[in-house]
Image (cartoon, rainbow, N blue to C red; front, top):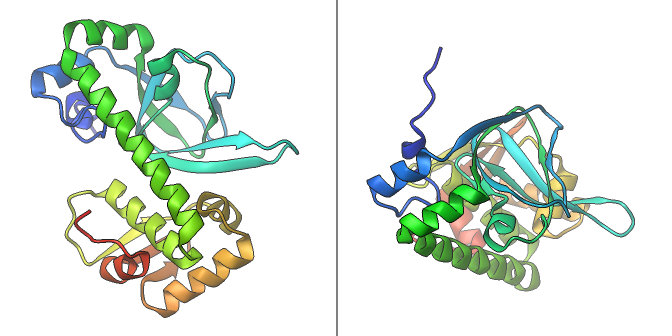
Length: 235
């Protein structure tokens, strides 16, 4: 039976707590609680009161909202060691989206009460939260810019590069294989385009040697994707 990773080590890989010193990370780790969700299970719903944030340790979570005509609009998929549900904990307002387990999901939960205790005893946690939220705002600005200014193939290239960085932020490999267990329709929603246009753009990326599709795996050529996405690999 595989041993679970040390929560403090996992925290070191998260964008929220990664910059904390070891004593502060261990203090946060003591406040975490385990949670598990089955495929398709709703973790929380938009409009609900939020009492905890989640750190993904296993599986994939879909964040989505319902449109006026009842369609589900996915805007993000998160995997380990991503954090979700933090906004309701930070500002005390209701959940802004639905969170659903795509497959079997395990998380570590940090309650709002525990977060407030940490703010009182560990000022560095508050500073980390501010930096984390600033990063979220920058990401949102970049996503809006990509949709407004860049062609679909560039948006897809950025999507794959972001997934690569999330999977292994320190990797120097020239090619990395990614799981892509979502439909082209859902991928289209994530990059702000129609399914036929995404299908055509995927074909273009493949013809340029930037990706290779192997069932539910996508092999990413980092240099080729960076060129198409107009991204500096060091960013």
